[in-house]
Figure 1: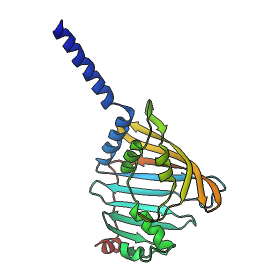
Figure 2: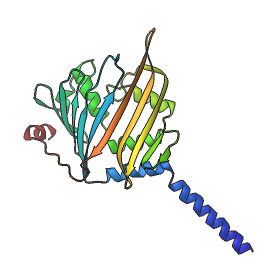
Figure 3: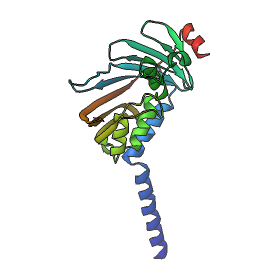
Figure 4: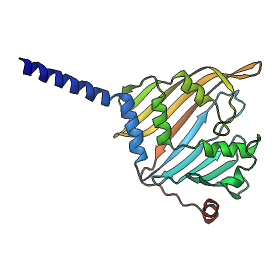
Length: 239
């Protein structure tokens, strides 16, 4: 009798452990890590904001390789394009006028508001989709699974943090109130293929309070079939 009871307890404990290991949050985190383990992949990012928004970000596209090299092309608010290659602390930036600059050159004077601050913010805060997704999973209250779709709510602190664009790590931030957000992940064959997160809240400017919000959609593509070939000008700036 005691043996059977002990066996039952062990089976129950194992079932609980398996259920915990295969929770929706764990499955999505594993799917993000599986994407990160691929030799390379590409992605597109689109950001939707309200019609009355002061700034309307353009689309961007990127590529990354497992060794850490990444490329990103961003359409700015004024429909110009900024392109950069980055690997660790090294980066080469192609400005809208077509010239290439090193990280140090492109971010000179970044402590003052202007293009250099914007570029510094992009470089300092750059993360590949696999990293972004895994961080988002950790910032959800919980996730529910429905087929290939996983969805849930972000914590208030996470939504607040994501709503504020930081020009540089540790730089100034604006006050955000009533922040909230939702996130959705799509997983196919155990690997992340797409994720979308929507945010809303109120930005405080002195005595003024402005409602803000945006939806960011990141779609993964060309997994294992992506190549990054920096031009010679970019390679020199990264050396």
